[in-house]
Length: 297
Ligand SMILES: NC(=O)c1ccc[n+]([C@@H]2O[C@H](COP(=O)([O-])OP(=O)(O)OC[C@H]3O[C@@H](n4cnc5c(N)ncnc54)[C@H](OP(=O)(O)O)[C@@H]3O)[C@@H](O)[C@H]2O)c1
View (tube, rainbow, N blue to C red):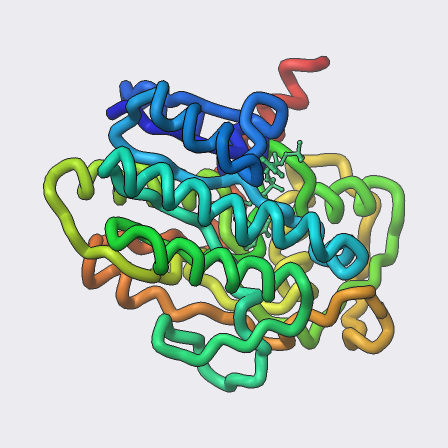
């Protein structure tokens, strides 16, 4: 397939590129410099000229805290960007897979969120992403909106890499224990997106909104303990203790949902896709990080 991917230098875009090419797809990747998705004319002209079979939007304004100060920019990228992509896909008569977030929910639930649950974002980032979902639905019926959560991977900045960096030099770390969600490996998400693309090409018409995240629900503290337990023997680490702290001890400009576990049954029923548990995905990531370390700079 000829797949048009925005945000190609982000965590998910980068994985889509490497896995998509391996699977024999023609990945037409665009980074921020080669296509600013908030530019309506550029989006229209670039999609039209590329004549892809499908667009996957991995570009987004993802700085959750900075968004509180840069509201206009967050909305330009997260609401207008998907709107222009959906408009261009509608004109080209091709589908759009658009990524969204668990932060469209306020975290007051006590059981995993389904696609039918009411959205109620707490901050600018979540509100701008929710506006992006509505913008896609309003312009293009042939869409998949894929909500994911707590993304980490080999490429880009993320919680796992921050923990490993801190754990190399510090014996004790403090990590928030009262925010719950599902960590998602960018590699697993990219594989799932390519599977969906293949099924769309084969004639699937299961359009709509889906949850797609790693199979393990945990807190940031639980996530840190799991990753250190797996990494300890393989990567040189100083860390001995991970202290559990409440969100109130780690204030941030943006309020985050305390519980944003996503229920992914709809994706399993319609696409037969289920992401692996945390330990499986982290082991694969550490295999790659160790290999990178051994291959040197
Ligand atoms: N990361 C998470 O934990 C998480 C959780 C839930 C949902 N998601 C969603 O998953 C998707 C992928 O996330 P990710 O972690 O791969 O994000 P990421 O690593 O931050 O990548 C996003 C990419 O979008 C690019 N970008 C920003 N503004 C742009 C614009 N106006 N035009 C074109 N490109 C632009 C960025 O480039 P520059 O850096 O050069 O600006 C960056 O390379 C996003 O939709 C995000 O909202 C992520």
